[in-house]
Length: 222
Image (cartoon, rainbow, N blue to C red):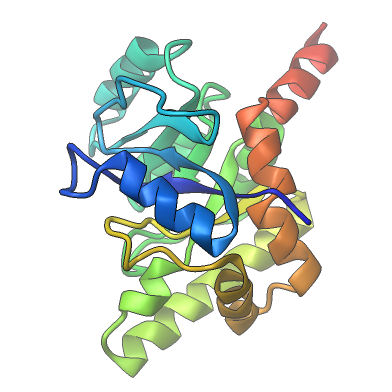
């Protein structure tokens, strides 16, 4: 059975839900682990081998993004950047210190990726996040259709340039968590094949945590 990992979960102190409670529910759903990526806040204690500490940097300033990356680099297991803004997307994908570009089109599909940006993602080993909670939380049919259309476009680009991709819940409560089989079913709505969805919930998150694509890049540079 694959080791499913959700790399974008938010818990206390950003939300009211303790990390232990998030992990308990995630384990019940079949996850091997979760990463706590609170916005601009760091999880001080690693609760168990199933909890990974990270940070999701949220800013509208490229200069501030670079300052925060410098501050967190080498200290956290996972560095994610909250995207949506074209300048932030580009700065994040050009920087090999970044592990994940979360919300690449914003939380409601208002932004976009393009060939140049996804090529940077592939070159620098930055995983493109497909946040499935955006689909679940969309209240209007037109909004959901727009989000699915953006995800479909992003998926085509990711496939073309072979950039790493992950599926995440962006959970802020135990009710936002979804079992892997539900995540895989939701991913099919924008054209992701079952085998690709399984990889995006297991092998690729594991590779992101192990800095797999960063190591390959270092070997090529040497």
